[in-house]
Amino acid sequence: MNSVKIIYLERANEIEIYYNFIENFIETSTNDDLNKILKSNMILMLYNLVESTMSNAIEEIHNNIHSNGVSFDLLKIELREVLVSYLKSNSNAKDFVTKISSIANDIVKISFSKQKVFSGNVDSRKIQEISKQYGFDSKTDHTETKNGNCLLTIKSKRNDLAHGTYSFTEIGKEYTTEDLEKMKKEAINYLKEILNNIDKYLKNQDYKQPVIA
Image (tube, rainbow, N blue to C red; front, side, top):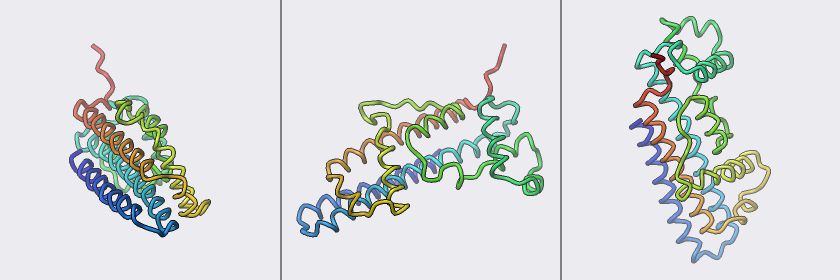
């Protein structure tokens, strides 16, 4: 998980730098439209952090299972169901047969597509759904994260911008710099705790079926 956490920290730091810039800039700027555009860009950066962090983390789960040589039949039933669904949508039969040497282990890696696991749809509800499928904890400190509720706003506004539903000035006028700071802190703290949960999950190999004595 080290590489995943490093990328998360790098992007979180980019957001801190950008936020400090727009906070100082807006204090003295008389260009209201530019101020709104800068605030909208902050939302895009936050969504970039959310999706990249979660897609990297889920990829790490697959890599960890594969590198540890854990067989498909030893995984929790919910995770096996996910892998089969991925295999049906992300890999054709020819590619799969060409790339595998041991189906019981390679299905974990070959069936997964990082580009397809999330596609503009990441919020706390999606993360909770994924956590149930994989078996990692999605609970966080409500005081610090508000359970990731801000991720829904970040996702929705990002999609409005990406699809051209609203302009950057239209989105930006909805938020003060204080609103963005609150959103930033909650999102960064939420992702940090989710990554810690996944780290613990991997160390304990909680993706395996419990051993019945």
